[in-house]
Image 1 (cartoon, rainbow, N blue to C red):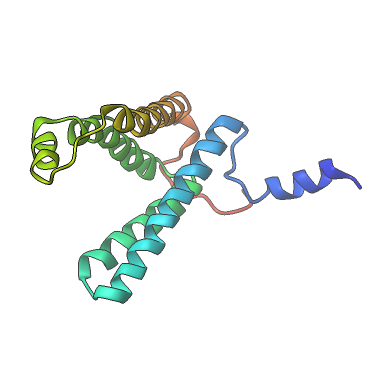
Image 2 (image 1 turned 180 degrees about the horizontal axis):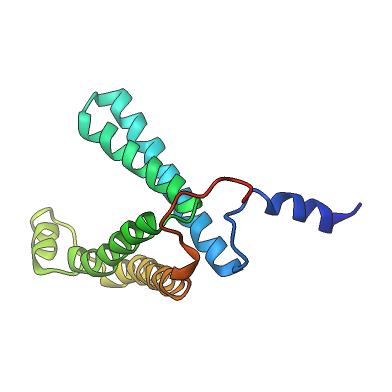
Length: 147
């Protein structure tokens, strides 16, 4: 078995860049976009709300153009990752959520919230670093597959 050749044949389907960290970040972000698109399309099939269809289509297009290393898709992804870094901690750790939890008769477990929050924000910061470090790898024009 020639495993190197098998891995080389898998590599032709990855985004066209020599930076393995950028490839992994783009693959993960595109997979998250695809998962969100599938979930939104399933919600549209269940509830027939136009917002689900629009969000699903947006995530699908964003994932495809991230895979093609488009500069505009990179800018949109950077904006969305900054929203995760800023808004997610503010949404979890605020006095209004604590009062809502108290009104519901539950107590906010801060350690559980931090155990979920810190890895997500750390991964978003890591993705932001990689996307900023290799911004020259993204093109302003449309790339054709195989070139």
